[in-house]
Image (cartoon, rainbow, N blue to C red):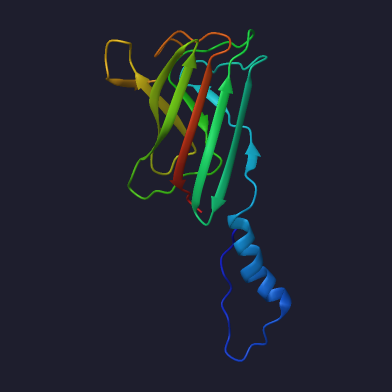
Length: 166
C-alpha cells in the first residue's frame, strides 16, 4: 500500500503523524502480508465455469511493482469452455513497450507441463502458453485440450512479476 511521497516544504514542522505516514507506513507496506484476490478465468470463445473447483490469487504490490500468484484446481463439476484462456490481473500492466513473462505450471496427474504466463503492455488479463503437444516445443495458448485435455484435479500454478500502470 505504498503511496506517492509528500512534497516537503522548507521550514515545515515535521510531526510524528507525518513521519509515520511517510516513513513507517511506507516501509511496513514493503513487508506486508500478501493480499488475496479472485482472478476471473475467461476464454476467447466460451468462458469456463469453475463449479466445485478452486481459483485463488494473491499479490504483493510495492510501488508499481506487482508480484502475483494464481492457483487453479479443477473440480468434478468444472466445465472448460472453448478457446484461448486468460486470467484477470490484480492491476493493469504498464504500457512500457515490453511484454512481461512469468512462470506457468500445469500439473495433470503425474505429468508437469512447464510454460510461460505472458502479459502484454497495458493489459488487464494475461494468458499462459504451453508446448502445443508432447512432441513439440512450440508454444501455444492454453486451451481446454492444450497442452492436455483438462480434467478434475488438474492444477495450474502461475507466478508473475510486472510493472503496473499506476
